Image 1 (tube, protein in one colour):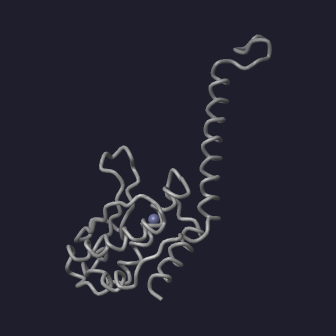
Image 2 (cartoon, rainbow, N blue to C red; image 1 turned 90 degrees about the vertical axis):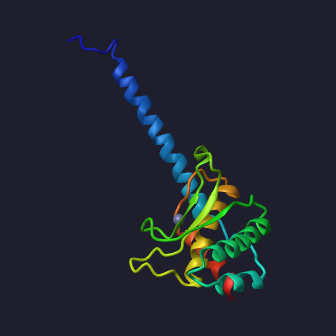
Amino acid sequence: MRGETFDGGENALQAKARAGRAMVSARAKAMWEEYRKSNSAGDVPARCPKRLVLELLGCDPTDVAERREKGQAVLNMLCLTSRIQTIPFRVVPGRPSYDKGYYDYDKDAGLGRSVTVYNSPSMSGEPVDGESFLETLCHEFCHHWDVQALKLKDCYHTPGFYRRVENLYRKLTS
Ligand SMILES: [Zn+2]
């Protein structure tokens, strides 16, 4: 019986579906490769003078401007010693979301890249202590490093990523 196919080949709809499947699998493959890259990469080479870390840890937790200034100094050193582009550091008072902070890597945003840390992300509205603040900064910096040094197109929370964050935090505070 004659259907929509010609000579047993695929019709336009079938061809479109096949092309769609190929596109999805190519995208999934690219994402999987990026995930593996993020997971298998070693520690970030970043370093920072103890003095700058102690100054950030010693900030008055309610002083958002001071935390921003000292945090920027630490972030600059982390970028410079890793030989990646320096980026603006922002501290947002209050609790705009459940996140502790974020790394803006959207080139289309027009604002450029930046690292943002929320000063009081908990339900209580209390500012986070210096150690938690530094840990979030390390987390967002590692996203920046993944994008810049590993050339990843997205941010991945792989076990390897968390290992980088933990080792960087330990290096800065030990
Ligand atoms: Zn993250």
